[in-house]
Length: 128
Image 1: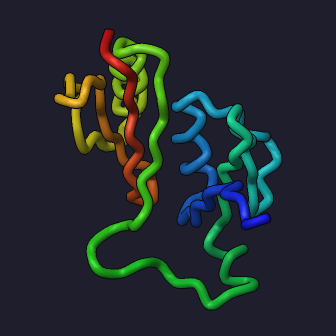
Image 2: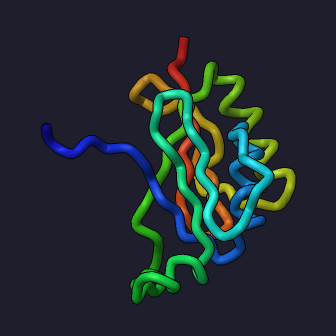
């Protein structure tokens, strides 16, 4: 059997800030925050968060260079209105919006916010 995609990992400069951001998106983040936190998603994929210190304790990891992160996450919302609501909630507490909600030509309500570590987080829902 070939390997199966199972998780996405995010290395966070400030673990508490990263987890608070993803809680705004509705993730059920465990209260235990000892440098590594895993959130089981309803589809079976895990979203894993590690502090820089934890990752550097077992590898020679260093932050990416060259103008930006290499990962974008996408969250499916229940409705176009939820895209607008989640975007507004995230931005209202000081996180950056890269793309304000709009009706995209591909039949989706779409927006992008930026997490505390500079990763793009897309919010989308089907129109009608």
